[in-house]
Length: 385
Image 1 (cartoon, rainbow, N blue to C red):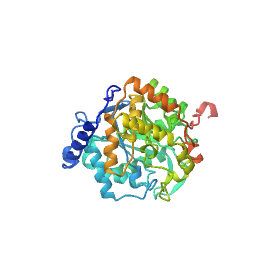
Image 2: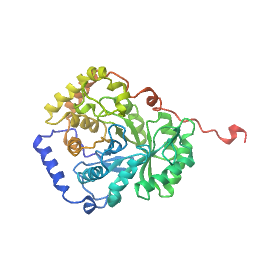
Image 3: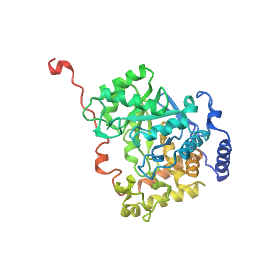
Image 4: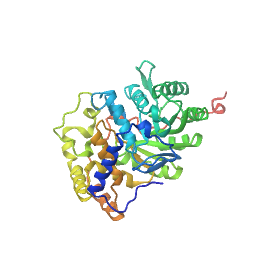
């Protein structure tokens, strides 16, 4: 069950006290603070993804050194930041072989190797990446390739098991039964603990779950892009699946710190995202003004309001905001203490629904990889063999 309520509110003194406590904890190395995962206490509280227990707020590690949003940061500084997140209550860390590729998994592995049993690591397979790091094709979820990816990921993560293994995107050439069956075998072998899907079609979720229970669906979900997350609410509740919200801060836009004058790094993914054209950054300002109004009302920040809203939607939602900055990390984690009464949440949702969002959430090529249904598995009787 969630430790997040929807009654009461936070004052700034409480948030500052939490930040001070977290900062004091940084004086002790995280590997000396490690506890058994069943008894570890977290100021963030915990949620369940299926039967996988994770902190209410996770840490997405992609932006640290993948080059997707900014120049790769110093590895030593990012290792320190990951450990600071753990010391502040984060137990759930997200990466993938595609981030870099490879180097993000190496970073996460180095940062968490001393506290491996006290954290949950999620990684992903599914893109056509060769062992040398070259793109061998858009997608590849063939069983043998999954096994090869898992073996390589285990080495980079410096571990002998992966807590949560996602199919990064549904492969339209491989039946999901073959994918789920391969992961099921890996679970039997002890190399994987739980199975997840990212941006899948609804029928594919149900078919995968029938072979190997799905613990989590990772979809883009934020106040800027609510439709992708809300589309899986019903099936999550029916099957007992958690929802991991990627880009819960709208790729930084919901922090209120990005405007029409913001200049992005030349390889920044936002340069090709329709919602981040100069015109749409201007057109979507009403959403930022709305967040700022609520931030004043709740003694918080726009970023905290955006994350707290996600937490208040469903008890099985876990956001994975990413950052490369300690102050932003602490600001994000402060969202765990921002709550809404039922009346406030109803008012908030009513106001938000009146705001039109300009621009598609993803560029065409990426959007076409979302919501894909895997092909049907053809039985031998149908083929005549």
